[in-house]
Length: 180
Image (cartoon, helix red, strand yellow):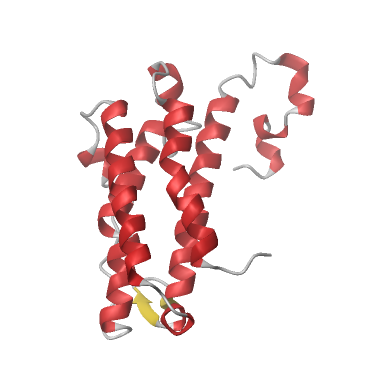
């Protein structure tokens, strides 16, 4: 397992907008609006969710940890804000906005010039209680990768029936593979 290191995390954070653009830009809505089920998000909605996180979660909470520590809990994060904020926007616009916001976030992260002592500082999550800055930033990276995986899995499962017997060789298409 890899220990969190900002120098190793930033290249992943920087690449997420390009990965999403390469995967989604220009695709028909049949791909970008697909959902695995009624309580699942489409690729379009995931991009909106990531935008909301750039605005209200990752860097704002990191700066809050550095500023007030555990004295105040983080503001609650609205995990479904994208349904209001992104619904009427084209995906290309959302991809551009995400790329711009993420660039700004990574620049702010670099400017913090975090030390090991900074990474050990704690904030107070409204659900989990005390969390370190290191845990928060590591979650940011894992969160990106988790949503990329979600998008790819959702898109792949659109062809779960179409591939016929090859499903046996494509575990991502089978719900029993622990892919939820």
